[in-house]
Image (cartoon, rainbow, N blue to C red; front, side):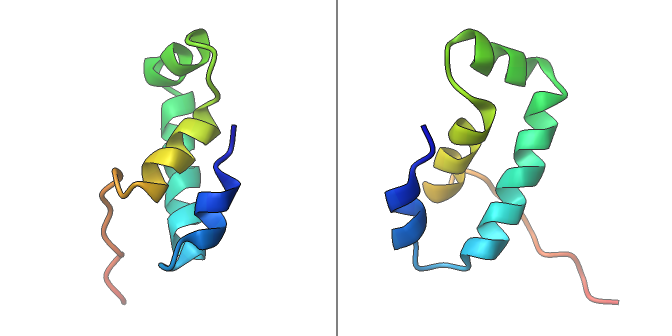
Length: 65
């Protein structure tokens, strides 16, 4: 289940966080980690969004050219 309330209530840059979550979900989907999540009855996007909302995904912004 996608945590919509937490997504709406988040006070940080939601667009940036969502972009990070999409990239992370793509990585999971292409690895065994995604298959493990699906096997447990969860959805990759929901798990990744929850992790992003709880600040469990670390990322850096690319350097400007």
